[in-house]
Amino acid sequence: MSVARLTTYNFRNLSSVALDLHPNFNFFVGDNGSGKSSLLEAIFFLGHGKSFRTSKVEHLACYDTDNFVVSIKDINDLQLGLSKNLETGITLIKINGERHARLSELAKNIAVQIVTPESFKLFFGGPKERRRFVELGMFHVKHDSSKQWREFNRVLKQRNACIRQNLDKATFDYWTGIFCQLSEEVAEVRSQYVSNLIAELPFWLELLLPSIANKVTVQYLQGWPQKKSLIDALNDNHEREQAFGYSIYGAHKFDVKFLIAKQPLESQLSRGQQKLFLLALTFAQAKLIARVNRVKPILLIDDIGAELDKSSRQSLSNALSILDCQVVITAIEEGVLQPFIDDFTVVNEERSNKAKYHMFHVKHGGILPVNNSVMIE
Image (cartoon, rainbow, N blue to C red; front, side, top):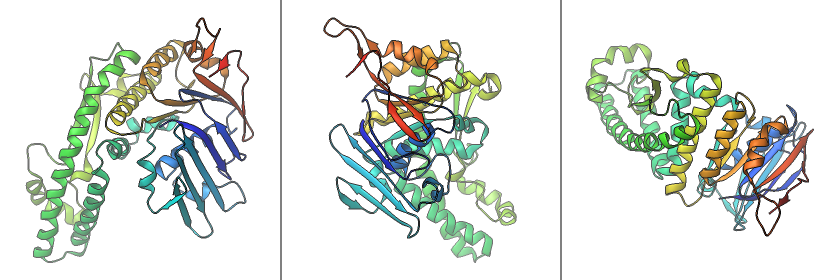
């Protein structure tokens, strides 16, 4: 999918917005607090039904308002819309004017990937952040995974309740048996996905971090000791579970570790290199989504100038030209976008210059297109 038109109303600090986006690249330039990240958040919210900045949905509405609306129209005139009334708690989801009950219906039509300054949590935020990243990709690539994951979590809650309430052995064994079966099924599907991600990653590392591309290893940890069956691991740790009050092993405890020479990647790379690795990983996931899904991902990159020098931005520009999806980038200063502007302007004989991008200035929640010196397609 490529967003042709984005419309927001009462969303964060944005004025009522109606923007025509380029199918390739879109740049938004403005000071901190001007509304750039809010724009990315609006697109992300439509794709995921939640924010990447807050868990409190009431923070998404403009000050002193109790509702907001976000909608898009794609290049094929497909219309997706979501509105939230904070006073009544009602969420209205529409696809081409028809109401739908589940946010997942929206996500079937729009896949959004994002890299922000907060994305460094993938390294420093613990297993929870890495699990979230993998689950985001699996939702689009393994279409039954979300249903499978909901069922697993239902059983996990039942087993944890058995542990806390010290229920009879027969009831506990019943839920443990189902828990082990579902854990193994989830782990198998997830292992396949991570293997595909690992296979795709080196191509993007060669473009963005060629000096370490052949040194990176990725470990998938299933959530229980590799050399034991899950049931044996649980039986061996029954007393510990009773003390903690929850299941200490299972599919919910999986992790993915990124290593260089057997050391955590974040301890070996500079901040700028870490960001390039995050981008390579996100690009690899975007390609997996594009391969199996009927919609191409939309890539959002917040504050492109942070941590990346001119050489790194040039490498990123080269990689983006290959990625083949719609990209929305924010920056504080227009100067950091020069490598992208140079690369995404095509000189030919029919038209002196033709740009593969749109540029906008963001100020106090208002967004205005920039009249570039090149012609916009």
